[in-house]
Image (cartoon, rainbow, N blue to C red):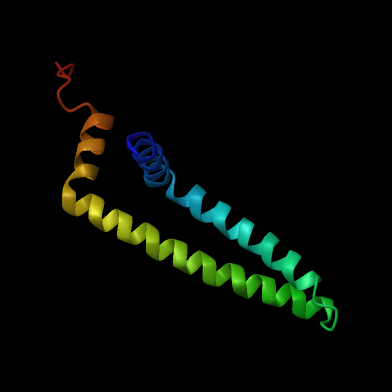
Amino acid sequence: MGEEKGKLESIRGWVVEHKLRAVGSLWATGVVGSLAYNWSQPNMKTSVKIIHARLHAQALTLAALCGAAIVEYYDHKSGAKAERVAKFLDLNDQRHN
């Protein structure tokens, strides 16, 4: 169980660091998945299939953006984001003479 928690934590860490890439990947996956599903429906015109795929992907993207906003909120509230920014800026480094 500890190993799974570490894997889940590493995935969460990657998503926190690459929010836009994660949302974009989810959008692309949603479009492809929805197109694949809609293409199996024989009684729809091609334009309707494409419109439905875009709408499904758009809804999935909105859900992903809401999820990213929640992660950002909890990171801000817990102080984890401030720690990452301080580490990135290396505020303890006194090379400014």
